[in-house]
Image (cartoon, rainbow, N blue to C red; front, side, top):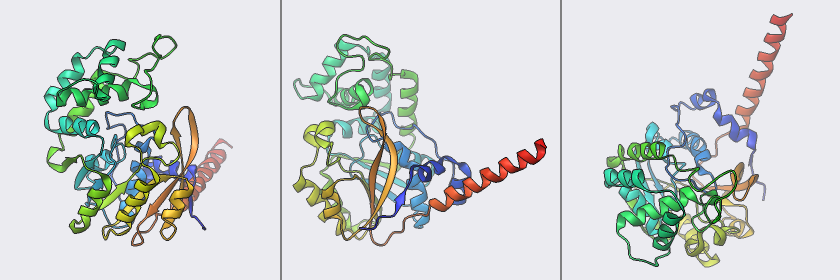
Length: 326
């Protein structure tokens, strides 16, 4: 299969406000999500904005069947690139957090403010998240949030930063800036009327969207690393196949990001597969290949020309500086 490729340079070109403006897009803020998430989808927010603009989809209703930390979609809502955001996750704890952030903001913020960030609290919320003890809805919301902020790489089933011995350069509270996190939660609540939270199976949700006018961005669990990250919320081959059948029968436009695995190529062989290269963090920083798969009625934006334009502009600037220095 001949796959168009977005290099790391092409993705990095989106850091340039000049490139964003060339697509008639507003400036997008970063780090709006209170979550840390493996995969770093916050880095894709500018690409998603450019993708929507290139397909005349600005102002659309944006649906995320696997919302997770919603790092890619929240900046779009905040900037007005999309009109409404549907956050769905099959993990009830994640869905409960988003529900609390939007509908019970004051209580959630108060609980974040008073929580003790230590190993005792970590064990408490780990037990709640694993279903070992009964808990209220707000405690469930806090459990997934606390573990995400205090675990290695933000992985919910990983151990705490600094380990059980709490030694080393980084300890359990190093990613838990309460003022900043509460500010992020309260900012999300401003968009209450534009945000819908659901807790459904992704394939079932997508089947229901046939009668809805929207754009679907799906980021399913990784095929290769899914079991290590999502545990019981990962997909087996049958579930990946079920979701593929659901999305491919959608009349609404859609875009999927996946890890580069043979099963994905097999399932979407007749769809246009574009390779995107971006840095993402699992156990350590590395450049990884991810696949972007779009419905047949969509076009992939040309970012390579933007890289060339930036390169030409940089060369011209250097030449002007050299002339001035002489």
